[in-house]
Each structure stands twice: as C-alpha cells, then as structure tokens.
Image (tube, rainbow, N blue to C red; front, side, top):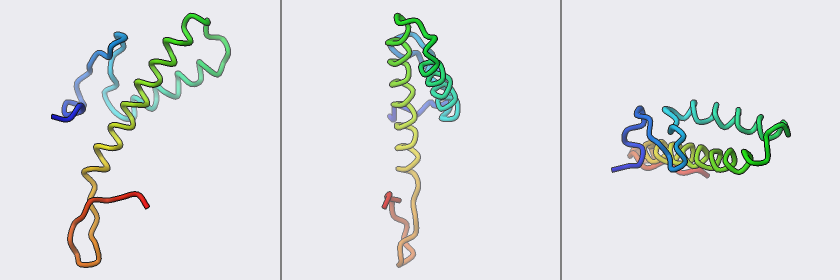
Length: 87
C-alpha cells in the first residue's frame, strides 16, 4: 500500500506534528515556515525543529507529486497510453 493511500487522513510524523491533509496544505505550511526562518526572529532553539518540519513537508510534497506523476498517462504516436515522463 502506498504511503499516501489515505491522503485525507491526518497522520502524526515522528516529531508529533500533524501530517498535512493535502498538497496545498503542505505548500502553505512550507511557505509560512520559510517566512519564519527568513525573518531572523525565530529563537535558535526552534530553528532545528522548524528545519526538520520543513524537510518532512518537502518529502510529503515530493511523494505526492511522484504518486500523481505515476498516475498520469499520455497517448503515444500510435494512440496507446504510456506513462508520462518529464523531458
């Protein structure tokens, strides 16, 4: 079973944060996290925790994109469906 078979269900990553419920949710969380990191206002103790959260969100986004890419198919010249590949 795919790690994202139950995308609508929130899961708990190892650090206790809730897994995003969608790709858009993950991107929004990443944007907020990056803004916080770039602000220079985050306490040093929190930087590593937030960086780790960012890597979890990025992994989630990459996994979701891969799952979608695996499902997308295109027609070849003969009219047969084949997996879509990035050029």
